[in-house]
Length: 219
Image (cartoon, rainbow, N blue to C red; front, side, top):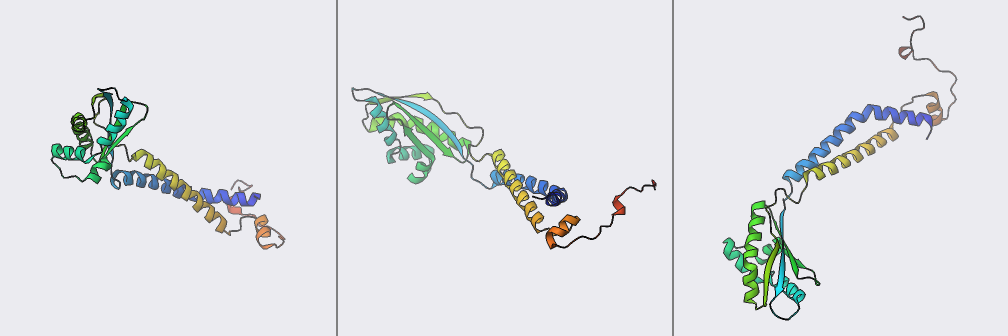
């Protein structure tokens, strides 16, 4: 890149940096507001349950079986009865996730709701029905909670600060692209070298810009 092009880029940056800052800040604010008001909030409560077999069969298998039972219609009907709601199986299946490791006797359950109160309440109801559901299916196992649920204080998603940073990054990228476009489209002649480069014509003479020069007599 030639010196006059760098000079022109510097002038473009000088003339447009305030706009770039405003765009970046506005995009950060938009990202924060969008996360705050434009997205569904997710409050997640978690708990871990130890499944202990009461017979000679494999305990890890009991845990895996229990994970399936806790996603069964009987479990969901029981939850609806206690919550006094009419949530569909699909809705409950979306809010309740139960996972297990094949080599352990521990299952992990998470409860995803739009409010922290609902998430915590759902976890309590779930824990109160775990042993009942196991007994109804004749699972020959007892449960022990090893990680009790706590009511979440902040939503797991979205993170307003993260969205603000993402918005600022997008704003910065847009600003850089805008400045480059302005710079490339700018055909202002800023020097004799610039004139010779763009139009391939010789420069015979150059007049001094007295407005930008210091009077040698001090006037």
